[in-house]
Length: 304
Image 1 (cartoon, one colour):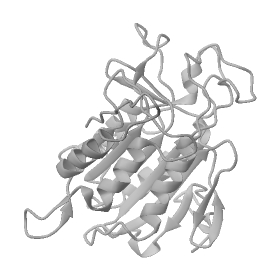
Image 2: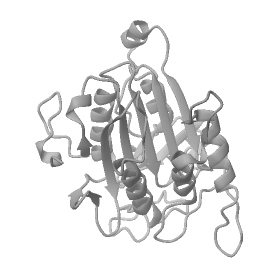
Image 3: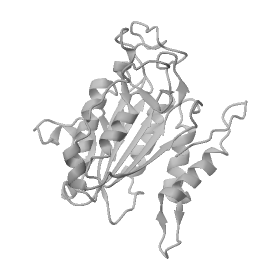
């Protein structure tokens, strides 16, 4: 397994987020995975940095690191089996209270921080890998704080609140990302958004920028493709509601996703066993809807 520093991008600069790459799949149909886990926030309570006035009840999290590592480990273990689009790469960006290391086989590799700079770079590089072949499949998993207003959603990154005049400069604009990915040549795209979708007073009734937009929709690519890519987005919870986790363990949604990908979402309606987007939704909903969190017995309802 090559180290991340041995891997080069088109710009001849190392992509520090890459923890696995199959060079033989560089131009062949493949599945390219990006995992982002944000549990440490510099400017939220307990983060050690200058506190932001826009915390709105958000604090430090212990589950995103465990969730991100579990998702990355599942793909790296060989459990992912798609003969038409084998695993081509796995990239990780992480901000955890203790360490940013990810186990790859017998080695520990350090992922870049999941701040606005690290995530933007990881997304750009992931896009280029996905864009190499129209038969590619793009997979993104995000775990951390999320806030929403109407159809808009911001995924909160490590440096959220570093700029009081625009705290969301430290966030990722999800809708802008999905829109830009529609013009990526990867014809199949799956997004797992493991975050709360609670309302934000700062976002409500304003046109405040929702943060980083590392990709720009390219009309020329859309014309070249002839149609937008097929996207499936799975949210951990319903609009306006919270997502849950157990301290120091993968989240309810992460466990549901991995259980479903591991066979719970498979069917043999066509004579062969495949995990399909619809069956995956059913399985995630079944598992998450039966996972009670804490003494309150709270249930979580995912949405797609």
